[in-house]
Image (cartoon, rainbow, N blue to C red):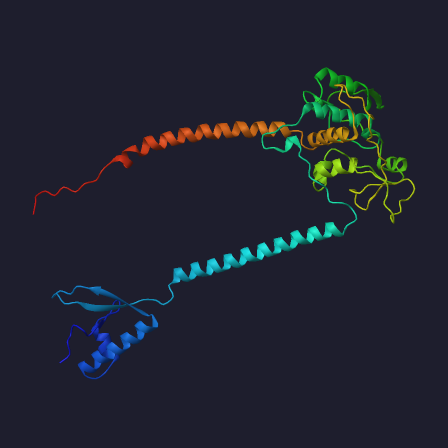
Length: 350
């Protein structure tokens, strides 16, 4: 006789021993032996897992339950992880290739790589030096305005930034602006007002090219944003004039600048020592003038530069205040839930 305690019972979800009897023919002993062999084979393949339980009569028997070899959720998670790893690897590889390709292209070019300078306004909470912005306006007005325009800047934008309101009005009144038509349909000249844009040096592009040997000087309003690493690029170009090295020919009417694309630039070196007399008595070295006009162009490209950082500080303060209120309300509303204690007290002791 076989010991029934060592013969495992194969039970599946929703089935009884009749399934075994229908699947395997023969006597009862043969069916039990067949179940043992099938259970061992399925357990070896990983399709069954065993669990211990204490039977009703005190003996220990082993019960096998049917499980899936590849659970659906685990398979989806595994595939997701593999796909995410492949995607991250592809993005990292492509980014590295583009980075080194850009470096190699810059190394092959004739112009030098623009260095990075420690500008005082690059900090998260740093603001523009308004004295430097005022000096930059003087450099633009004295030197740059002979060729370049600031067609998107109004005189009223200078108020409380580089000049007072009276000074800005005086600057606007120095120019004659075409206005009209009048009651008779004629256009006329009038002194400028704060609402007027800063007038360009030339009336149109053709006149500008004719006066600059065919070159068209760019508008300086958003030049910092229009060039790669614009702040350091403009400063490097203004201070990068030098004699052409051996083997490089410069055409007549052009100058050599190592930081300008191609090395040959039509604009001569205009920013030189003592080209401007500053109102505050600062010595106008070449680097000082370049630094001041760059800071001025940073302001023209982003007139709300300081205002944006002030609004950020105000927004952070408001968010911190609201967070404190929300935390207090949360503690107050959830205090009863977090501090309560649930205990089971039976009606009578057993």
